[in-house]
Image (cartoon, one colour):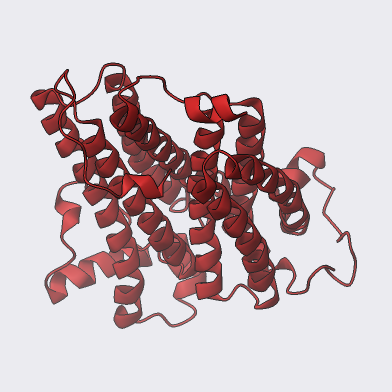
Length: 356
């Protein structure tokens, strides 16, 4: 079904709408979301996320253009807890600061670009009457999710700028990442609905089947756990697999209660993330196998990505969280979300229901 999108959009429908054109546009936006997830992973792993201490939606488009401007930005960063407690004692230079500044600036620039690539064509299609009946509210909801993503990103950054915090809150990190991936799933699902409308002329959106809903919910929890592991640097809790600290179940700090341990203890969260992955894996393989008989490419992609993600997770651990392996793990996670949405759509589409 995904591969079928890559054909020339059809002529306008009798009502003047252009669902084929809209489907192409949403797939392009989805590809940009995967790209920004990759850049976000690099930003986090290079500890670049706190290098820009202000949110300037308009003026922040341009990086510093003079030595004086660079010195001013560096001075703002030197006032942060991260610099005072980590970067400063490590001997960070202006050249080092420029390196981390680039990734955060580029991440924010991509966010602005995605907003424009979504909002401007949406307005154009709306004015031209290209949006089919029943899709305007859905597209506005996706636009709102994109706007929230920017707000959540700033709240995440701000959480690491006060007190003695040298990292952003892992809770805000998970909200930021999960919102991006929910948006990605919504883009894929809507694009596929529009493709079906373009292909058949029948307005019968896919339904979320119970199996797909369960698999999606479990994957959401696993992604959230992964964000917590990343935010707490819990990936460094062990560089061996399957054992941690030469044990299957590592020691955890229960002194502050079970709730704190399950949301803050790096050893426990690392342990849960690495083994809950197999629950998600089993459900995704099941969903992929169901999708295979309805829309082969989506099911094949989901199964292949699920296997690859598990292997990349193990390699990330045993390499001591090698940056590029960890980035590949995060990008594959985003692609896994897209494939899950496509497989869920295949299972819940009218054609899929008829074959069931």
